Each structure stands twice: as C-alpha cells, then as structure tokens.
Amino acid sequence: MNIAFLFNSDHPMFNGFYGLPILKTIIKTNVFQNTNRNIKISEGDILTFSAIAQSQNNTYEAFYKLNEKVYTPHKFNKLIQPKLQIVSKNATIHCIYIKNILKNTALALHEKLICYEPYLGAMDIDFNNKLHARFFEYSLVTKYRIFNKQCSIFYSMGEFEEIGGEEAFQSEKEIFSKNGFNVIFEDTGAINTIFDKFYANYSHLLRIQDFKNIFLKLPNIDDDILDNIIISLEELHPKLFNSFASMAKTFDRIETEEDIAQCSISGRRFLEQLSYYLFPPRQGLHHNRKVGKSEYKNRLWAYISDTVTSNNLDNNLINEIGKQLDKIIDQFNKGLHGKLDIEKITLLIENLLNFVINLVTLSPNDIRKPYLAYQEEIETFMDKIKSRYI
Image 1 (cartoon, rainbow, N blue to C red):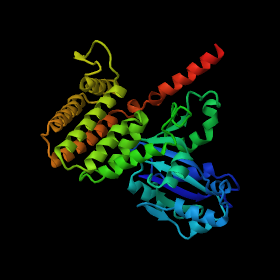
Image 2: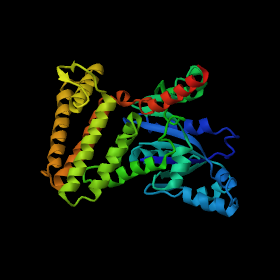
Image 3: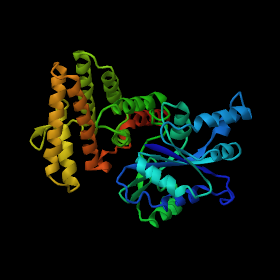
Image 4: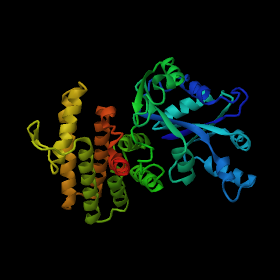
C-alpha cells in the first residue's frame, strides 16, 4: 500500500523545526527494522493553501473544500477526526508518504503514533484521485529507501559531492544509524528530473492504477504482490507498464479466443521488453546460448544466471526460475493459437506476476536502472548543449 502519515507542523513542540523530529519519531517506533519490503519514503508539506491562493477562487470556503477532497481515503482510513479537519484549517500539514508498505506495518506504525500529539492520522493514496496524485505523488520529495535493515539516502544525477557529500546528510544518517540501520547513499539517476517524461504524467499513473485495480481481481493476487511489482518495475523502466496495462485491459473484458490471444501477445511483449532492459541484445554466445535481439528468452535466462552467480545465491535458483519462465512463454504461445481458456489465462497471468516477483527478489539492486529510461532525453539535451557551444 501507499500510505500518507499526516502531522501538524505548527505544533508548539517543534518551534518551527519539524521535518527531522517527525522522521526521528517514526523511525524510533522500530516498525521498519525487520521489514524485507522495498519501501520508499517521501516527505514534505501538503500545499493546499498555496494552491488555493494561486487560484481564481481563492476563498477560505474553497480551501476547506479542497482539504476535504485531498484528505479522502480510499480503503485505509486511520485519519484522526475531527482533529485533522480543525488543524488543517489553520496549520500546514506535514506528510511522511510511505510507498509499498504492508497493511499490517502501516497499522502498527499508526498505533505507535497515536499518543504523539502532532499526529493527525494516516490514509491510503489512490491514483484514481487526481488530487492524491498532485499533492502526494508529485509534490513530495522522495528521500529514502528502507530494505532489510539498510537505509538508502537518495541523491540525484551524481550530485553527491556537489551538495556537500556525506556531511550534507549527517542528521538524517544519524537518525537511521542510531536506530539499527546500515546507511548508504544511492544515486536515483534521472528519476523525477527534467529528463523524466513519466514524472507528473497523470496518464502514466492511471495506467499503473488500472494495472493494479484489474489484477486485484485475480484470485491469488493481492495488494502486497502488486505494489512490490510496481515499485520495482518503475525503477527498471516505466514503459513496462504500457504492455502490462494493455494486457490488463484486455483481460478485464475477455470474452473470446481473440481476447485471450491479445492477452498473450501483450504478455509476450512485456517479457521481450523486460529482457531488453535487463540484458540488452549482443552478438556472440553467452553460456553457449545466442543472446541476440530475437532471443529474449535466452537473455532472461542470462540475467537470471548472472545475477545468481554475482550475488552468490543458490545455483538451483537458475533452473527453478528459468523453468518457470519457459513454462510461461510456452503458455503464451498456446494462447496465441487459441489453446487456452479463461481459467488458464487467469492462472498464466498470476504465474507471470509471481515470476516477476521472483526475478526482482534475486537482487533488488540489480533490477534498478536509474538512468536507463532517460538516456534518449539526456543525449538529446547534451547534443543541444554541444551544438550551442562547440
């Protein structure tokens, strides 16, 4: 789930300095120290007052109505009312926005924060609500990743030394390290920069939400599985959701063999794209297999093999996950030729989602490609600079 935890930034205990104290309070609850989820944490103020001040209808009545719409949960409602409603009329609301958090972890954190006076409750973020996208997903700054007692503090596009290196993050590092985390610094590449055409792209967010809403109908798939896939594929290449969204929409209206064939085409196209991003085509052999453009299955096998080897994992995983891949591709080929029914294509999509989870779990670090999706935009920008000054 993606959950927003809300706080009164004007509370007297802060004396105007609230960001780090709120973060410290959350980390000291110890709810994240044993999680094996790939969790991202964003933070910032919810700027509804500024939005109204810059609009044509800049009245207090409009401000109150906007707050009501922004602070509307979808299915996780732990808002503390009427406290939030009263405070939001006069104070700036600070948010710690946590992505890919388990529901039980979110509930545990909420219970630990109940007695913290500035706390105003928590709610889930649903991208079907355009205001949720605007004030939470787009406006807040993603700063940290938590995974297996390791905290990554983010910086962007190699700017680490330019902004002061480790010293610039000393306070944040201290908060995490004193509470049981090994702290590292992670380059997030071109994500959420001027080169990121997927950032603040509401159509892209809706594709992700469609993917989630439709596949939640699968009998053996839940929020936790889908959120884990979403956060990982977003870090590999956002375009992967084009194929997934196409497959989801076709699956949602399956009636004929043609619909099943279209689902199968989208599934195979997704695997082809996945292989291109994880193990690009190359000439020659790799482990005695061709790994050219058309050999997408071999390239996925190559990624599995190399990842297992480089991370010193159990070698049995190579055949285990590789054979899972072979079976999925074989089933998609059957779907193309009208040899699957609705029950079998449903099971096949579940198997595809579980395969992606297994692939990601091999090495979450290896699956991240923070510059891959933005190479074209970066190269175009650099060419313009060269043409102007050289």
